[in-house]
Amino acid sequence: GSPLNPTWLLGLPPLRALPRPTIWAEPASVVPWGQPVTIGCGGPAEAEIFHLEKEGRPSYQGMRNHLHGTEARFPIGAAGEDTAGLYHCAYYQGFTWSESSDTLELMVTGKEASAAPPAVPPAPGSPLAAAPSAPRLPGRLPPPAWPSGSLCLCTRDPLPSHPA
Image (tube, rainbow, N blue to C red; front, side, top):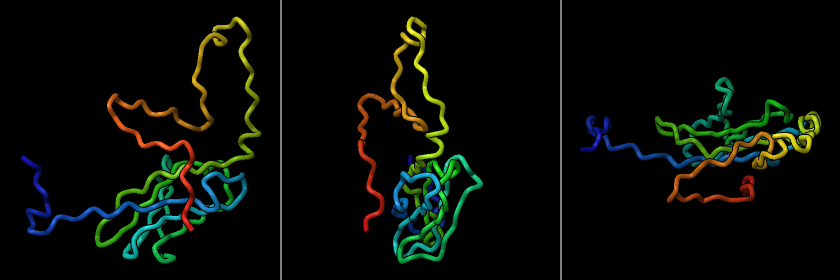
């Protein structure tokens, strides 16, 4: 049998899922160190409050109810080490929260890249020289291992920021 739906028990129609909000960064999702950046979150006209969260920092959150039409903007300030990371947003409408947006990866270039020591290749004949390794970009996780028979809709290029 199917699990009981609490709204059905109360005689209420089931709640419909709210559409996911969109998320973007202005001026872009890759910004130079020190440049101001703003994260935008968009939803339907009926959205009452937008909430921004940064993964890995449960204490970081932003709430906005002063909207620009169907959007909320969260000024992050000058991009720095604490700015880079994964962000997502949601909105509140009609006594419920929407699903989270897709994840926005905000990357900061400049200062931290120049602070990293140069890579030194292993000496010829050392065990490290013979060990093949997959190339990795700094700060990026390796791609997920997909089970066989699964489908991935992947893009090589980053998605465009917010449409004008």
